[in-house]
Image (cartoon, rainbow, N blue to C red; front, side, top):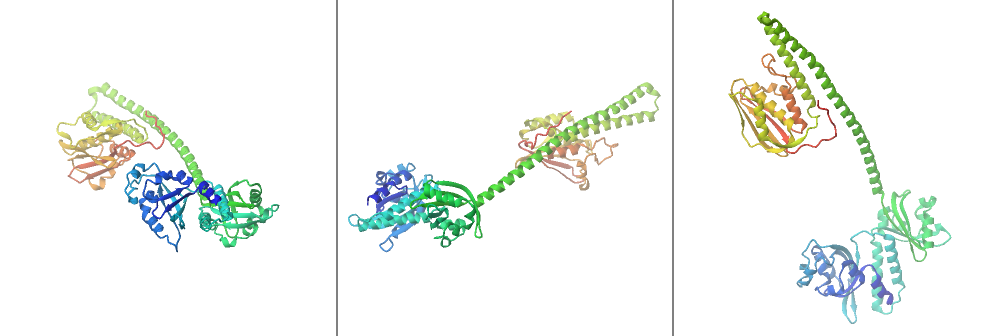
Length: 554
């Protein structure tokens, strides 16, 4: 049985012989190549199964224990640890093989085992073991299948010198037949009966995976010619390619091949490889789903490109509109302010020229005229500021809010009768400084301006709220009725006549727009006679701009 000895040495499958206790008697080179162990390594441990994954140990032990004279062969799979992940453990391990494997971080390979119990005349009962590495899918199904086919044919032709060796050869041949049946790729084997006739290819073998990939049963194609089995190949060059592989003994990669008849429709990745006896092996996989996924992905990419182009165009248009709006606001404010200044100057000149000759009612009218001019100028400035909120990109900087509030309070110069208290520690964080100054300045000045008494108290506090800070500016003033709490945020809206209290009605509109521009929210909590509390949120980190829109700040 020299051929079987050569097979044991040359096969790429893991093979070994162990006694009934699992002690290694011999291993083939593939065992050491795949798993890293030499025979000397295995003799250091109580059992070949010492390196089985702990989670797979019980099932493996039960399968091996089920070997009897009546049931001489078992099949099972488990994870097996590769060498260099546990050498220190092996040297110090106990007799309990299950305790050897305690490191879940080791490197494992899945092995599909077939073990046969053989009664040797001189060595007693031995276990002949063969394992197929199923950790990764076959990288080259054609070459591997050709090697397995050659081994299978070689085993079938081997003369049996003794009864025991003949039984082992038959068992090993059966293992390879089972390996072909259990392959994860579809397999068709065509035999070219007439080397001159491409269409004389006849199906001689297949496997269950072929049925799974195509939905065509083995019984319906075995023994059929290529056109009887697959009539839609009549108008293609595929039969000629298969026949040429059998004639030239050169493999062919056909790539992705579409096929459709009344039974099946799909796309298959096909490889053809030569076999003995003018046979051509065909390994294939159904890649229809991946093709459809690729088509859908391409469609999504095309849609995304179209949307991006539209967004780019919209962004450019919006940037242009913003620039035009800034220019319009600047020109408009300049053109409006010029006549206002002229009116104010003219009124001043008239007062100076007439002096005490002006009647008291005319003096009052001139004062009213100048106040209206100042009001109009304040409205124009407010409109300019309002139009820029959220569109002008501002520089972010690290802000100590305690210091910033001190500067704001000093700039407002509240009367001595009003106290402004910071009741909680204020945070320091990165943000744009100007919007924060606008928000706090407007809220604090409004609390003072609209107070119904000459003295009062304004309280400022802060607390964390997830990714935001929540700030509160509260006063003990007259309060605001619920019916008007939304109205005060509307531009140009005031609760008192401008003749009674000079106000543009823009301040709170700027506050709300500034808060919303950074992703925050603002709310008012108030009752008549119980003061008012404005609460707003501000992000702990500056928001990132969603585009490159710029605005020209004049």
